[in-house]
Image (cartoon, rainbow, N blue to C red; front, side, top):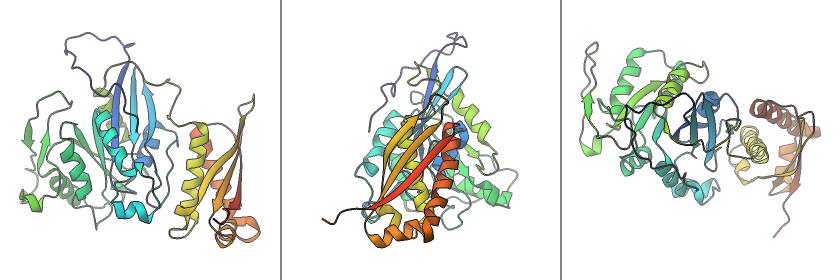
Length: 346
């Protein structure tokens, strides 16, 4: 992956006067397990649906950047694929870059946001070992814990226990790579303290998070607090992108990703992971109307018929859903055509 040239920067003195026109940047790596809500969070923070989302795992196949310009600050979100094992990579037909992309993201990041699904009672009580391993490998990068989907939790006590477990009862007050780390114990005086084992084998969380945010993308809560915090972490650097940009992907790539994501929602089991999407036509007229044609290559006639549905009804349904998503990405009218073909037998 391409590493941002501004990844490493010198600290600036706090007494330096910065006027409102000084360009500032913060690079934010978004990591977590598949389907934790990483892409949805970015879409909500930048208010555009530029990162493809679906209900299935591994919708995000490559690192994409979401760009949010707030006043003089540009927040560059690095939307990473969900952390996977080599077995999962082979099972879901994932690209080779799937595993290696995390290293370049972490090197480029000024801060890392760990997105954790608070609603999944099977996995919520501890950070997955893949997440902990990544944080341990890059301890110099300040990290935030973002508890997502809190609208599905009824109990405040559960939230407090989650925070206590996932932070190992500690937070770090270090906000930048160049600051010395200093940990302090969390104060849970309003609650009976929970015994947290710090035995290496029993570790559930990460004791170096600098802050915890509780958000609900569905109910739009906690997002502004998180965005304000990220803006405050920005440093004086030239903007890497135009303030009009909301993604580093081309419109053609955003369309391809949106079609692929919707196929994941509409096709059963692992079938959609073997479909290939390719844009054939992209045009934009003087009125700003986009016309695009995407071809989906299927591995067999059976899969092609399954995708099209009776009288092409399913394909029309998919096209309508993708069109609605793309209008939220571009804020422009779009005429989308999706066609299917079968890959030639090798």
